[in-house]
Length: 348
Image 1 (cartoon, rainbow, N blue to C red):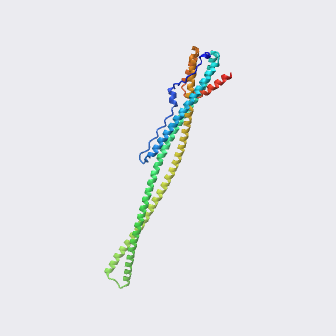
Image 2: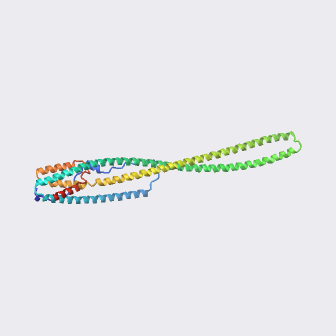
Image 3: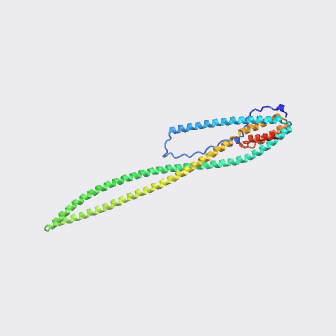
């Protein structure tokens, strides 16, 4: 192939392998298990609107970045195509051109195999990171549900504590009224006793008075017994209420400590999940730079389609080996390898 057949190479889009396109697409996040409807707070419409606006702005930024990256790739492909055409036009014999392309093909094939192995390892690591992220997200949801339950239990304990305090105040007021009533009765009884003592100092009472005194004595003893029993009952009731209040306080303190532990665990899981998301974003940026290399490969293939039968067969085998390798990241460094090969050929 002499210099008269060298023409400018148009930019051609290489059809992507379906498996490569599937592997290149980002993995969809695992669905978040729905919380129970009971006790769920209502969603604020303003917050939902702000989230939608932020998501749209992020999508627009991603689209603008993709367009800039696409334009840069096209510029690199055009530049590499011009350099390759210029280099081939300087070569004299077709065999020299064929040897040059064959050496370059062997180097690129070696790099592609190595990159393919690295891509398999990266894919396995990405799958493992995705599994870890899903597991951490599930644990985070469980911790959130447990925190909501603990908050609900704490509110119930506060309500019960308030009710117990009100009941205790009511019992104290009722006990005070009972004490005053008993005190008045005792004063009346003391006056009656004084009257009886004074009557005893008087001359011997008749039998009817003695009978009345005995009846009065028995009633007085029954009143005293009732008063002592009532005092014992009030003391035991107050002691029971105090123990209930202490028990509820201890239980509330234990629930509060458990809630703090769950909150710390939830924060740790959130930090791990964000770290995995940053690693995944960096990995996507590295793997999405393979389109320009494929266009360069198509340009190299189209140059040799205008040569003789032997050159066409070699170029076709080179093209098929490169495309059928089923690796979407294998051609990531094709641009740099081509530039180094051109520099070596220029020096020789």
